[in-house]
Length: 331
Ligand SMILES: NC(=O)c1ccc[n+]([C@@H]2O[C@H](COP(=O)([O-])OP(=O)(O)OC[C@H]3O[C@@H](n4cnc5c(N)ncnc54)[C@H](OP(=O)(O)O)[C@@H]3O)[C@@H](O)[C@H]2O)c1
Image 1 (cartoon, protein in one colour):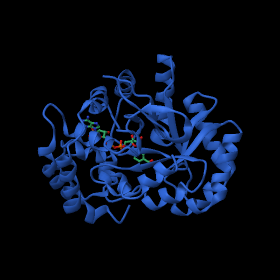
Image 2 (cartoon, protein in one colour):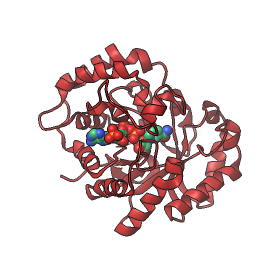
Image 3 (cartoon, helix red, strand yellow):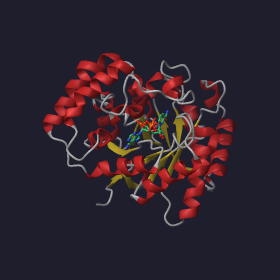
Image 4 (cartoon, helix red, strand yellow):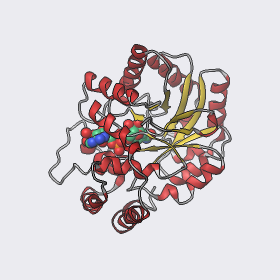
């Protein structure tokens, strides 16, 4: 079965409904060797993936450079490569985003890392909320499109409120947001608004940092340079990016409740990805994969039959009972 494609908002692109999240092949997930990183990306592309998400800060450019090298070696039709900017600002504050010269510098670096003349899609990388209220930032992005350095731009947000504000800007073509069985709020209002405005939605952290694979336990140990060790309480960046911000013990209990829903011959990770595909507003899901086996298995989630109403209801119930009190009003 070939991987189905979905419309990517107003861009005219159709992209594979399952893409490739390239954070882990850059850094912050313990050590992922060069061979595994390349094999993971190749396995995804071999399975029909045509959308890759990366950022200039993943491994300080390592992720972008691995993507450049793998795509050069493979030749042929290029997938869409979305990258992000803003997190190189130090301190990471609103005034940095008001400096067009700085933004252009980040873009030039990504152009060089990715080895292209124009970037397909650049996303503001979870900027401070205030940035969404500064039209001059979006004007600057418009001028970088006009200059031919970027084809399109979008945003990657932490909060639903930021997503709703961002799509008021007419040239924001995409919103990347955490959406998974532990983060259901985007479906309440934001997805309907995104559909109305024909804005693409990129669903990130679909496996709640690996929690929704069902493989973790109270005894799991993470390397010191894995964010699941060093950002468990938001020490380095928004705590919502690590296990979707759900306390570890609560997440384990909820995962146990979900185990009975896993279809025969499928994995919990595949169930988690298939659950996201049930939502029409989602253009592409970007599971992170650190080796070829994970990448291939994640793509094959698209082969699962649509989930039953009973399964969808049970996932809602588990979310309401265990997860919502910890995350619902926060993000
Ligand atoms: N602020 C932002 O814009 C932002 C933030 C976060 C993520 N993202 C993007 O979203 C992408 C996805 O999010 P994520 O990587 O944070 O989280 P994720 O996709 O929820 O989880 C990825 C991790 O789960 C484990 N895993 C993946 N597939 C598996 C499988 N089939 N079986 C068992 N384990 C599996 C792997 O880690 P282990 O094997 O080590 O468990 C992998 O690194 C990122 O790569 C990045 O592109 C963007």
